[in-house]
Image (tube, rainbow, N blue to C red; front, side):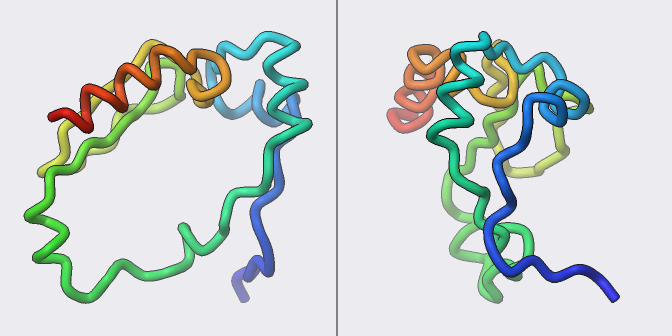
Length: 109
């Protein structure tokens, strides 16, 4: 039987981050700030099914932001513009100005 989470996925420890999430670019101060303020990831984003009517969604412009420091290959997502800022997994902490610039450019499209 598969495990069903009953709450958010907890914030990861530095050891798990270092072992599994590539070159994340966090300074010790960034890491401490993130751990002090971070909250768990809502598990529903992994468990809830996609909407039944995806035609409306497919008509919207879609951008996938991946980071160069994340391990693995970029996903193949037809219909998505791909943007890869030079950052690890947490650009909002390690490189907020660059991420804000990317988000602004995407929003202005």
